[in-house]
Image (cartoon, rainbow, N blue to C red; front, side, top):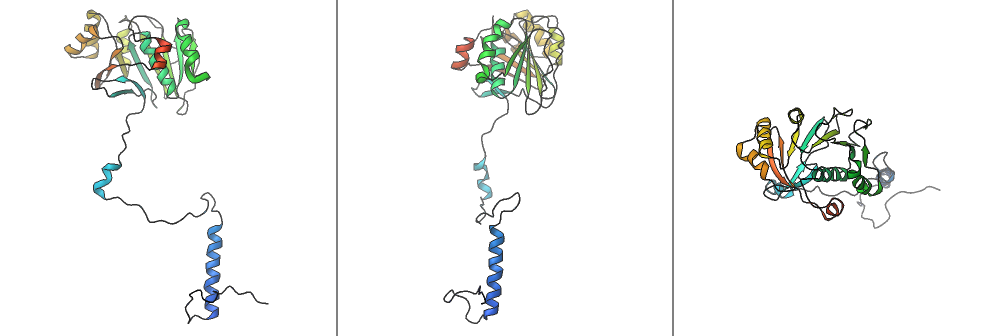
Length: 270
């Protein structure tokens, strides 16, 4: 008995087509259907075919997404726009903050929230312990270390590290230095003798309220215009002048409810 793969009667096949030609076309069609139904290695089944989507050139701007800079939102600028610090970088990055513990801790919390591991080198562990216990929802993302005892952190693109050095007025040279995906934030409560060296080597400098004499010195070191360095002695709690070699911006750090509950209100003095 022979098996026929021909088109059934009434299927709409051309009346002039011979049985052999109809059988050949049906066989090829069945072969294509069988091949299409087989999973393609690495690609899966062939999906449905649709017309390509197209947009007129004059409407392309409507597809733009409001994506800002990548980093830690440290506060808002004078126009109430988010101010972002790009802490996690593929190159060594040093930050010096002349300011209060409160701002440094907010920065550490928010860096941890972006997925960075935070290692705190400090001589006042009692001031950091509540933060370390509360951060990460139970995950050990903030670790505390005695001064000079920070071990290698093994930073990588998938596991960036922020080292916060809270070592007083004269921080010793650290064993762990900035490296790709490992930034170092040094907190100075005031302008100390080691400050000029730190400011000159830093990629980013933050300055909170200081005395008029300190403001004038910082102005000379950072080449600030007079109206900016004179403002440093009048800044409110939570306001920081962040400086890079090519940009300067006053930023107000506003704590979330959770941060206020953990750290209290913004303050310059500790």
